[in-house]
Amino acid sequence: MYEKTTRNILVTVQPFYLEEQSAPEEDRFVWAYRVNIANRGGETVQLLRRHWRITDRLGRLQEVEGPGVVGEQPVLKPGESFEYTSGCPLPTPSGIMVGTYQMTTTGGEHFDIDVPAFSLDSPYDKAN
Image (cartoon, rainbow, N blue to C red; front, side, top):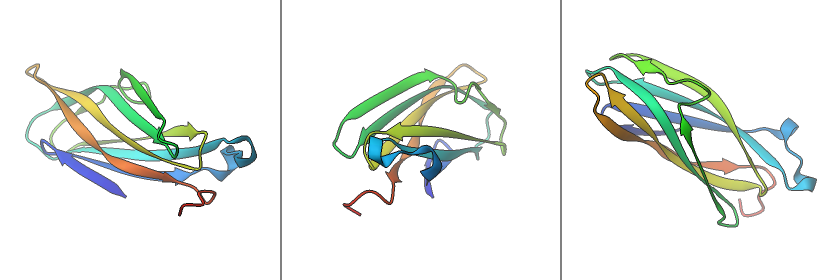
């Protein structure tokens, strides 16, 4: 489990290798990751956008940006949390993901929160 807190918002991530969706002989490795975003602060916030930096084992970088997460832009009141699961395919047996979520307060202030860097590991990574 990986976690990081920014402005009293705790983001935890748990990645899982998906053997049944992967095809190592075709250089296709797939992971799911479960993210929990917990508002531990005193103000209501909304997640507007995501930005991911995904690096495969060979150092190739892919960036993914867009509105919300899994088609949603959740509003989190103090004490509330939002959890979702998504996925990531790579052409190598391991990699790293890190990112940010753009948030806004009810007063219109925009700020970024960090998603902790997390490792995408498979049993096929000979470096492990």
